[in-house]
Amino acid sequence: MLTKVFRFAIGCAIGFLVWRYGTPIYAAAVAPLARVFLSASRLFAGTRLTPAGMNIEISGPSIPPVRIPFSELTYNVILFFGLFATVRGLFRDRSVIRFALAAVVLALTHVFATVADAVFVYATRLGTWSNAHFSPFEQDFWTAADYVYRIGGMFAIAFACWVVAAGPAALRSASAGRPSRARG
Image 1 (cartoon, one colour):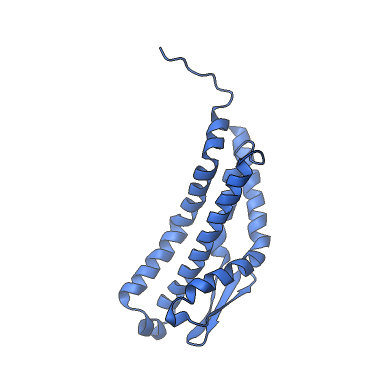
Image 2: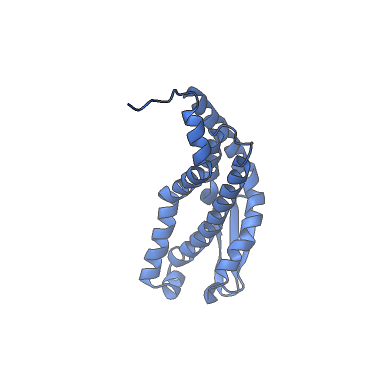
């Protein structure tokens, strides 16, 4: 048990370093994908998403410029790395493929979180501009989407990626070394 706690702590430390120093590079990869989804809306047509350190700046011909805190949408990678560090044999067999696929799923959720946060900011944080372009229902919807993701969704996503991808390996390592019980 203590070994798993230690492995989890080391994984979280590695995840922190990846998140802290990789976020500006990661933002440059996520921004073009998020732009595609944002531009699907007529309001956001021609929108530019520009990475700016730990943030993404959004501007366009028909929208005021805003800055969203991209790092606040992606720090669940710390938990993700911590959880995967508890899996024995992570870098053997199919576990590496499962880890890579889980990382892709996590990255896709970051794209959608970026889109949702951007729309949330435009729908709720720009006063009269927001009220002129978004109905009260739309404002409530985007507020709820942003809060659900930030409060628990981002952690649930990291945990679900781990359970689905590492479940078989995690179960094998958890039961290793235990004597089997004979049924009588």
